[in-house]
Image (cartoon, rainbow, N blue to C red; front, top):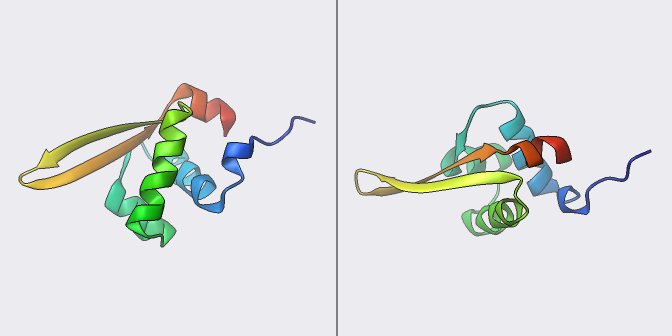
Length: 80
């Protein structure tokens, strides 16, 4: 039996990966609402997933508001 990826043991990181598995992309606000997490905690966990190569984060602006969008990578799909 294959061992679970320790990076995915975190409840919040696993929740983020589950959300992204079912959508093409998800913005930060959507993920925060769906996971019922704080912005600070979600930001830290998204950075960990991005640094591992599991997700891609695109940061930009819509008007004057910052917007972060996340997508699965092939590496993330395999790890999940």
